[in-house]
Image (cartoon, helix red, strand yellow):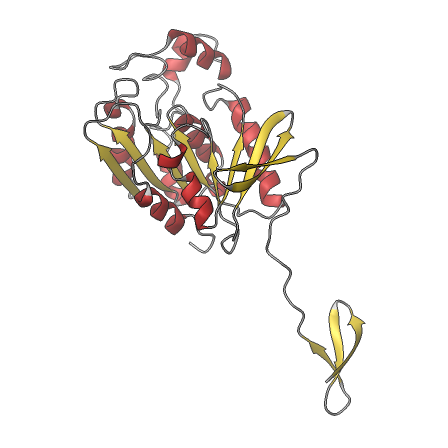
Length: 285
């Protein structure tokens, strides 16, 4: 068969009888476009990292050596360099996930932060990453992860919460058994544009409140808690997530650390977290 020319995007060839037939053309590469304006390149846990500004805020994307089909990715919402080896992200990159971070500051998952996170998500998806990442919510990062998922349930595959704040009344509010943080509580009220504390206490958009939306969207949850955490008490946060999500029929794996407090985050061997995320964050899932 002799190939002649391109006709309307198909390779035109002469068949055995001289008839013009279309030859198959290779599918375009599924690699992501990770060349960002003004970026700098460094390494993160041995992998290439693209650092850049997104809407004026520091951001980065780590590139795996061999991306998995569909370009799945994990997204740390807060504290991307805290207990990192214990919190699954480097292992996910080794497994073929991209890994991203956008610094939206100490904003407790408030509406302005979620809007900026949504724009960042849209940009990375436009550049070829999967539509539904796995969100990593460490400590107060749990507010960011669950709040983003509640507002954008079709844009999330998995939430991994680690000693995650799931009700800001518990922390930083300190309205239950936890220590709270008066300075952070004041900053939280400001980030959510609450006129006063009464409005914050009446708010019904905390992670413990928005689980029906996540369950309906089929978002899988994996939470790790230290059972003696006195900063983010499990009974007011992770344990409520587990109880309510199971009642809703949602997919959840819960990992207890019996003698652990708020620190250290993660697991000595994060393989169970990695395996859960790989299973549930595949674009084909």
